[in-house]
Length: 248
Image (cartoon, rainbow, N blue to C red; front, top):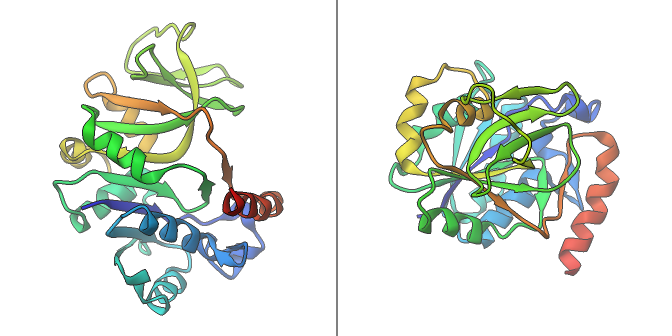
């Protein structure tokens, strides 16, 4: 069974004032909510179960999914209305809703891309990875650090010079600095590790804690086209992006 989780619980503060009255997941691009774009892409890629976490205007997301007839697949809600758990904590809470024997593809609701999600998931299934992280060479402030075999070694903020890694004194010269896409696949043998984490934490904290013990692999996409619909000024770009992806 192909299964996925969509992060839809965020407050969407960068999309105010739109998110003063609706969740980020229901902000429209190309005439449809962001959630519609991600769900329909996952469904077209053969995913049969999707878990959506909710917090900000949670009832609106739940109602929208019901109105869509759950898109004729198995969609489950992970309710974080009591406390927003961040990305790692969100996965930790949602794990009981998944098949424990199958990988989980994680996808931010505000990411639109040309990624072949079926191929990414199948790559994780067929390889010996513990997690497969979709990355690319693009300009940002924060990068994941990989060795020549694309094994995760750490993280850096190039603006501040901060480096985080379980390897003390990590020399980042020569390491691949790649930008994280917000799309990744977790494999079942790392699911138990989430019980060792706190209730609230970011998924990058998880990867950095265990990357010296587990194979967290970067998949570099050379032709990745991706847009983060996180700010108001990105909405017009997202409209054109959707049109261009549909044309190609």
